[in-house]
Image (tube, one colour):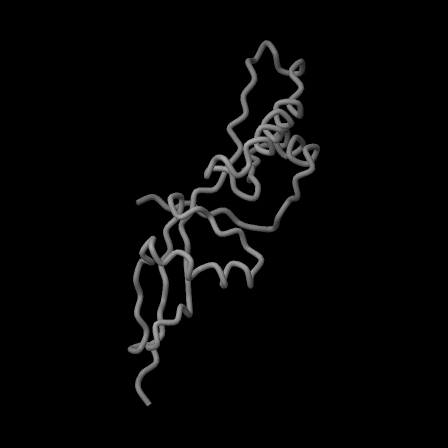
Length: 132
């Protein structure tokens, strides 16, 4: 039997083949981003089937949030979030930057509270940063 690793092909998925990712994303319950906003490294078996995938994608990240020092405690932070959420709902489907949701990287307790009050769900994840 041939070495399995030698039978695998690793490459960037050409945009014209983006639809090959649809079954993977549907099976996993994931949102497939617009191909203009993502890239995918794929692994093909000897028959050309995708057997692995790693994606780089733009994700709508809400932030930063800022309030002038003299207005802190007077500005309703949750209202700022609600205005943005309403815009996202109104423009869904018209703008490829709008995916299935947004993420907030809460860097302090105030932003954590705003995210929770806005109905966002805290996920257990570690954030890693890579510079290239």
